[in-house]
Image 1 (cartoon, rainbow, N blue to C red):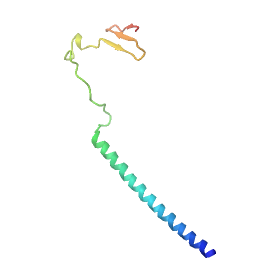
Image 2 (image 1 turned 135 degrees about the vertical axis):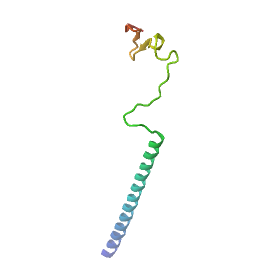
Image 3 (image 1 turned 90 degrees about the horizontal axis):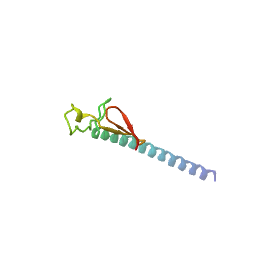
Image 4 (image 1 turned 90 degrees about the vertical axis):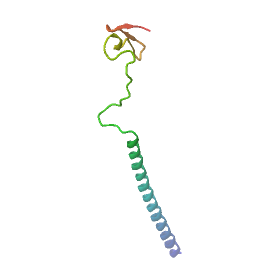
Length: 92
C-alpha cells in the first residue's frame, strides 16, 4: 500500500513539473508576442518624443493676418460664449 502511495506521489510530482514547464513556456511565448505587438504599434504610430500630433487645419478665411484670421467666438463647456477681442461674455 505504501508503495502505491509513493508511485502516485511520483506521478503527481512528474505531472506538476510538466505543467510548470508548460506554463513557463507559455509565459515566454506571451512575452514575445507582447514585444512584437509593442514593436508593431510603434511602427504604425511613429511619434517623436516631446511633440504634439500635427493634425491642424489651415485657416480657410485668411493667410494668418488681418481680421479674418482671428477667432470670432469661443464657446466654453459651461455654455458661455466669449465674443470678439474684448472678451465680452454672452450667456446662452
